[in-house]
Length: 298
Image (cartoon, rainbow, N blue to C red):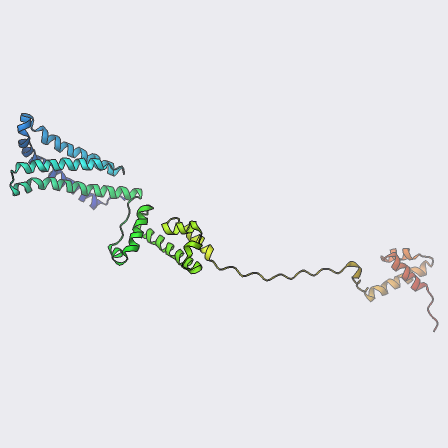
């Protein structure tokens, strides 16, 4: 997230103050450290305060750069602290046991290190936010109200790199929902009855989406059985099927046509009569026999 204009102005102002603090601190401690080192270094005693102060600035600069690149190297910070502590000790030694002088000599190096730590914290937070590795803290109120469950929640955030506190809360809610389903389905001994992988996922708080899907499938009520379908009726055998009766109008028409054909051709056969009437040979023969036979006497 880029800085706003006001934030950039405030950062520039703080940088100017820091530069002034570093310059005043270096100037104030230079003479004191040089005087302390003079019995051992003589005319070259100025090298000691100059080298220590430049070394502190170099270590701090490189440490801040590595923090910015998300490649922190704690050894650089500790070396900068060690050189700063040495500078404070040398300045305090120049006070010759006077408490007021010791406090005045130690004030500016302590301010210098405090400012550097503030800058390092800001850089580390911004680099961590950009990389998604900064873990949000758990509110103090939750620690006070539910210390045991909060410790377990915080432990899972640390173990599984959950950086967002709201995400951790949602994961905990899904986990407890799955536990409630298993307890309702299997009873208090659900750990010995549920699948081992589901128990592991819920115990360690990992793969909770998959675990909840598995638990939902395990505890879902069985679907009601569908009623049996009636067997389809078998068609009657061909021999037992009744032929539909021939409509009377059709039979009358055939008889009238047959009589006309018989009158025109008295020697016609039953097969020929059936062919002309578009009926079977047998039906034609029966029709010919019935129509050719003489009518009974009254």
